Length: 499
Image (cartoon, rainbow, N blue to C red):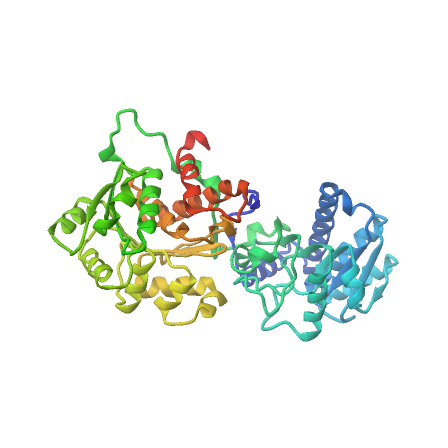
């Protein structure tokens, strides 16, 4: 089940911002760098103690502490010293005996406590029951060195319970990517400021249970680099409707898509639009798909379109919001509808093949929401999927700069950017990796836009509703979860009195 992240800060920072805050705190006489190391090490030991209470199998188990030569290693040495003081069996594997000033202070304090150090032993790491990971911190750049990579592989091959300090060794704090290889942690305790990369990309898999200790740095931060959102935000966005409200006040949406063989995509998007609260929803699709769309959802209005005609333009004009792309295809039928929708001045959501068509005829527009997954994002930017995943924050910025509007980059830790505000939504689970789930998201966003939310707000809230619905649906298991399984939970989540 997905972790509840509501106890974490909403402000996210880059590793450079955290470093700047540390130096500012020191320059203003509030602390020293070594005092910050002591606070981090104590927080790590307290975290381990709390986890031991939750996991009785950890009781009495010896600790293996892996120590790098930077301040991340210094944090680990303080944790090892405190564990030694508390009577735990502690073994420390040290790569180097020289490092930062703070590292050498922490090492001296650990040795004075009676601690001993050893050189790393791969076999012993593989057999360890509990590991404290202090190998690499935020300063690592480029691929992990071969010597360190061997240690990380040994950690991952073990059956140990692993606590990573600040971030799993080998994870980039700013992007969340794994630098060739990275520790798989059971718990990650982040220090000082919550690093933006820990909520997206590979970090979502490597961090395990993510927790946080601020070390007293909060007053020394400037503006955050990004904002975290989650299910806790929903209550403030869905007020009860007026008792005299009617369907015309709940938003009118036209959804366009569903070429031959893809009726399911537009059917899912349009029902999600209704379930998210839109009052009136029209579907423009192939005439042959009316039965598929209406047989189990007669509330949807339908227009069968063979060729773009005046009725299509009337239904575009009728709508407050247009959702274009689910099952649209890239053949003449879909292309002609793509061009017709482009003549409308209505706010729109572009998904799926509408994004692929846009990549072939790029243009910039302010009143749309683009919803690419990494493959579609790569086509939009003319690069590879690997380039997109290398830095999801840079990718969403580049997409927004090129195409305008609001851009959400789907994935583990969806990233949303409107040219000013960067938002990370670490919601949802691998059950969403199945056909139709993206179509459901576009329908939700369109519904929220039609109900009066601005494009950025509707996108952020829509992503959270979608992800939280998936988390609720996953109670019965992630594997085998269908896009249609989200529908009852979407309805629940957009009703504040049920939250």
